[in-house]
Image 1 (cartoon, rainbow, N blue to C red):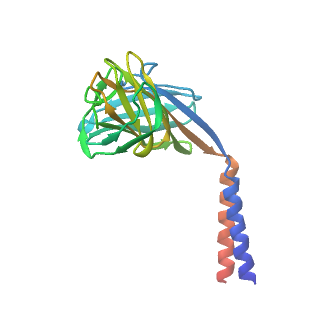
Image 2: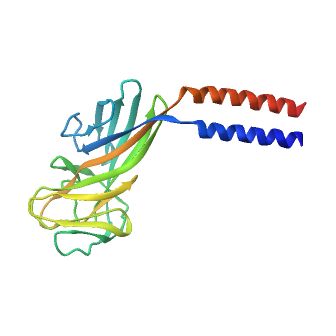
Image 3: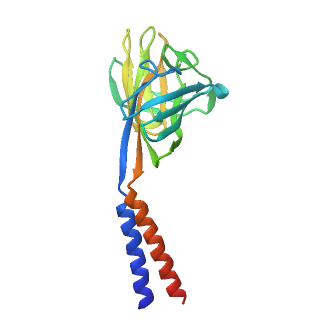
Length: 247
């Protein structure tokens, strides 16, 4: 019975620790992210307590890699935003007028293609042609004060640069958000908080379009000081209980 009670007490103690890990959390919204490597309204903006202190773009193997550094006044957040391009996707878009819907289909291709610049946005080369896809991901999150979580992409913009009859689909699979627009207008593309954001073209024969003004959020968390004290106390308790059990 003594062993059982000790085990129960130990379990309850660590359960209390899990419940006690209340953190100071901040959700940082990065908005209007574009295909440039300068800090400012034309590249990306944010509404957190701090500011972006560094933004560096490289072009490894035809893809784009953006390295972000964000300082909140106390701690530093770093992460990479990757933009990959590929072709060969099979796309089906049902919209026949300038509107949006949720019945698009995409089977992703696997042929690597170079990412390029379309206006201030992204393209596969200088345009997103039929069956070409862009993939946006955030990786290598490091927050010096605690933990960081990527919450997903909230919005993207279909950037019209010339012509008309642009067709874009977001995601992979079936029942996807699809849009068709033309004539000097851009289109808000619903991304649904995707952590891996695929945007494919179903048609651009009448002109060029790209992807611009991405919005995404990252949440940082710093454990309360009391959490560390509780952790130390429970670790000591567990050690004592194990010693007593062995003796």
